[in-house]
Length: 252
Image (tube, rainbow, N blue to C red; front, side, top):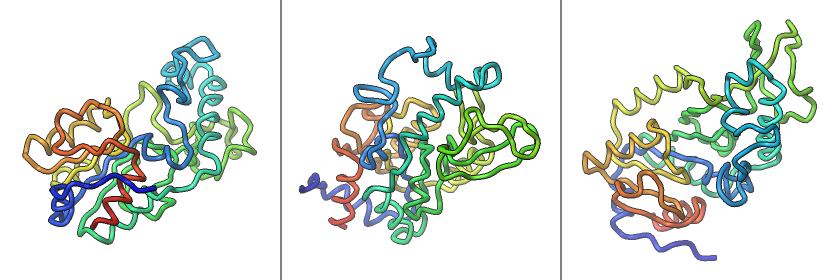
C-alpha cells in the first residue's frame, strides 16, 4: 500500500536539518500491534477499571504503596499487551536516522522499549521501561523479558521487599536523569522537531514543539487526529506513524 504524499517543503526541512528531535507516543507503537491507552479500542477505553477506580488511581504511586496488588495487576496488563511485539517500520526508520543526521534524539513517552529494540541509542525514555524492575527496599535492579514467570506483585529475591517497575506512575515525579538529559538536549537546540503519535497532553511533551514553532523552526506532526499541538505546527501529516515515516524516508 502506498504511503502519504510528502510535501516538498517537509522534505527540504529534513534535507537541511542537522539536529532533529522526534517526540513519540502510543501511536508510534500502534503499528506493532500495541493498543493505545485511551479511545475506542484502547487498553483503558472504559473510564473505571474493574477495581472500581479510574486507571489513573490504579496506576498511581499512592495505590502502589497502599495496595500494590491493584497497581501490579494493571502494570502486568500493560506488559502483556507489549509481550511479543517487535519494532515496526517507523521505529526502524527513526533508528536509521541516527546515522543520517549529525544529531538525532528520540523523546518517548512509551514504556515498551521498542525504540531501543529497533537500534536507537539516543533515546530519552521519559516514563521509563516496563521491563526494568527495581526493589523498593535494597534498590536491586534487574531486567526481564516478560512478566510471565513473576508472582504478582513480585518480591525481591535478595530482601523480600516489594519490587516495582521503573516506570512513572500517576502522581510521581519524572526521573531526574531523563529530565536532565532532555534539558541538556533542549539547551543545545534543534532545527527540526517531529511529534509522532502523541496527543501531547503533558506540558513537557508539548513545550518543545511550541517553543520550536515560536522560534519559527519547522515542526511536523504525524497523527491521524487533532492534538494539543496541531494548531502550532508548521506541517501536519494526518496518517499513522509507520506509513508517514516510511514515505519520508523513501522520498529523501
